[in-house]
Image (cartoon, rainbow, N blue to C red; front, side):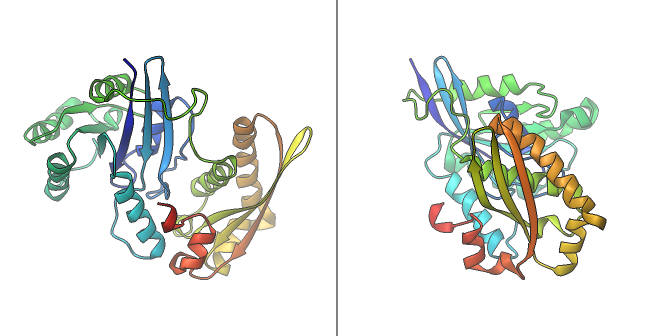
Length: 296
């Protein structure tokens, strides 16, 4: 019997959803950074086995919208919960489990059916601190399974995978065996550049940046890419560029290495910086930059 289905990973910002997705797939399909709300789109990761195929959706962190980009991300989460087979709800083992979030989990369990709770970052705490939290979760109704794990250390990720496989319905193969994500190479390249910017830039800047790929030209022995980092303020542009272009060079150098690994080719990468004032509150700008609500 061949099993297949759709699994949505949800939770608050920075609980490790993208890290878990990459660990499950065994490939880097979603960018990771210590900044909350790193993921903006629903990222599809595809796990293939001899007798199964699991299509995972990594969603943006659950948040209260402050601008139109946040509205897009919230709509992405709601879209990812439509027509799925299993919900994986993630919690951070190092944080308190608030009653309002537990009520949200309880509501999902009642309305959506198959719900697995994942308690991530167990490598950053100890059993004495974790036990009361797990006891609290055990009192919730309708939870199929609770899996403590460390996505970063790949600890118990196999336990989660087995729990998902038990719940997966009989189905068909949606994607070829060699496909790990449905996102285009251009999209993945833009996300790699944004990831490096998130790692290296100051706290106030990352949420106000986006990446636009202006050229993606495959030649015989090299791929030439022109990318633009969009920011909201001239002062941010100066910080992104850095003294003598040092920050932009650092972002570009680190991004190029990952892009070459992704594309399995030499890459010539040019990165520029442009200011687009309040782009996160412009429907036209967020659509142009790949956050189109019509496509959700």
